[in-house]
Amino acid sequence: MTRETASHFSLQQGPSADEAQLSGMLTIYTVTRAQTALEALKPGDVAQIDLSSLTRLDTAGAWSLITLKNRFAQSDQPLQFVGVSDKAASLLDSVARALPEPEPPSAHKMSFAAWLDRFGHNVFSGLMFLRALTGYLGIFLHRLARALCHPSEFRMTSLVHHCEEVGLRAVPIVALMAFLIGVVLAFQGSTQLRQFGAEVFVVDLIAISILRELGILLTAIIVAGRTASAFTAAIGSMKMREEIDAMRTLGLDPGMNLFVPRILALLIMLPILGLIANVAGLFGGALMAWIDLGISPAMFQTRLVEGTSVDHVFVGLVKAPVFALIIGVVGCHAGMQVQSNAESLGRMTSSAVVTAIFAVIVADAVFSIFFARIGI
Image (cartoon, rainbow, N blue to C red; front, side, top):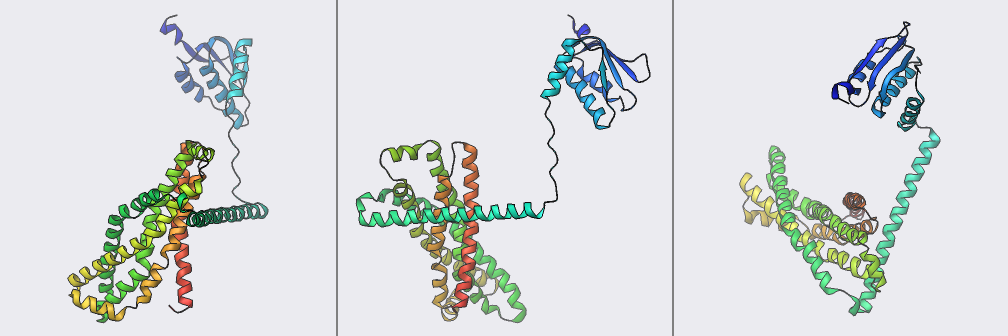
């Protein structure tokens, strides 16, 4: 069969005004041209199509005919195929059954009962999530107590490794972030306070903001982004490769070997990172105050010591262990929820970062309200 013969197709007017006739071959070679001709047919102008003159029909041609029939049906103008051979009828039926059915559009309006059911389901899921996190916190505390009673079971090498990963490698980004925050606070504060001739109070603004809130909060957010994702990825990868099941088979406790070193490293290193952030933030604020306001480092130091209470340092650093527990528990819990596929690993890693940052901000708000109520 030549290419010219295979591409022969025509659409003609039938004996009656509401009838069209197809002739030639309606195959993959002619379906593009045939589709253009069939789309020109309007519902109501044609009621039936004669297929008796078709010499060949394949699935591509059957698809074009079924698509045309469905388009007419949507306009309440049924279209019939006449002169169809048994083989062509069977092919048309097979293609019609194989076409996907469009999903019905979802209702935009939700009934009160459906809304209440969805709300209750979300609340229950949230409570179960908090319950799971509390369980993992209990596992950590239990394994930590067991390590204190049986020091031989504790993995000191793993703790040192995670202290380096969590703390030492985070020092540059934490210090740079705090330094820039101090610069911004000093610049914005001086711009506003200059209007009232109170530029010297920019020292109090910088000190209280960084020591009490921003230093440890932004440090915890950065650590949450780095560490929660790292914990989830590491433990999740072990879960995917069934290494955790192998550990249990060998009699090794995942809580003792995976959770305790990671969370304990956070507990040790996050307060240290908070101190580094405080020093870097004060240095950045002092540098900007010197450049923009002419406040010398000696004057900045004097005003800092005289006008800033040590309570602000205490308020900031007392949050660090709580933030560390939140980040560590969330990261370890998310890692243990990873299934045996890469999509689950990516989803849980993203979820761990978002959950850890959100929980840290909520905990900071609770601390702020608590310290305000007790007058610190």
